[in-house]
Image (cartoon, rainbow, N blue to C red; front, side):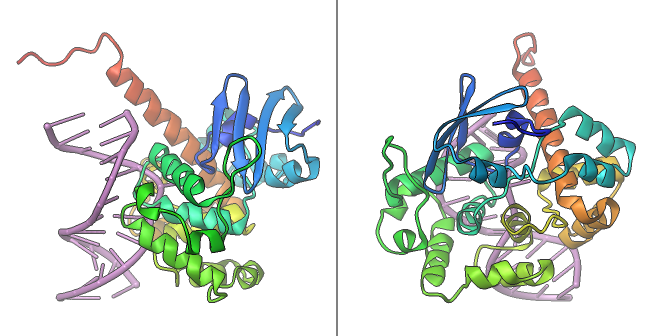
Length: 281
DNA sequence: AACCAGGTCTCGA
DNA sequence: TCGAGACCTGGT
């Protein structure tokens, strides 16, 4: 299918989603209960497996006018240059249950570990798909069966089980959540044990279309401190970013995130490369 | 082998 | 409302 301005690799490798991995030229992943293989050639997006174009357009937010968003958030040289480096990266529109349950697990863990935890949860609780992969478990599946201890979630296990049960029992209402505005949604989400400021913002941004949400993790905090001279509480930094970048602050946040991520990876690989010497004893 | 990780909770001021 | 400390576990 033809796509507008879009960069599949930047998009899937931006830490928004945890069930995708690259295999040669292809990206393979499971979204809900869809198993997908994707490859991009220029403005052609090639799909194997579940080839639902309407789904892909919605999932990758191909309806967003990226150029208009860039024009809106490019309020300083710094963000402009980062956008230029990662042009085509889009926010991903995730389903609320999967997104919220995933980010509940994401706290205080690095991306490789988050991926492992989620795969483990899917393998032990999710439906087995035709190709041998596993669907993301429903609230019901997660609330009841499955060996959650085997998933090595640490203290997150109780949060997840508890959240799944309250969703299953209708005590936490995802349909209601979808009707709330940004501030209300964040407040409602934070009534869940394990969902605080940052995770609530991730859910609002990645699954509720609240593009003004600006999750602040350690990288965004670092970027805001080093590039904009802003530091302090979560509220202070997040609100400053929202004021500065405007109604698409969430997009700006994601560009800063991917830039920080690549910078850190580069530093790490440099530090370990042959040629760096360990100090003599 | 330390340090860190897409943070949250609890508690005291 | 804010800051400080604890926290499962595993990646790097």
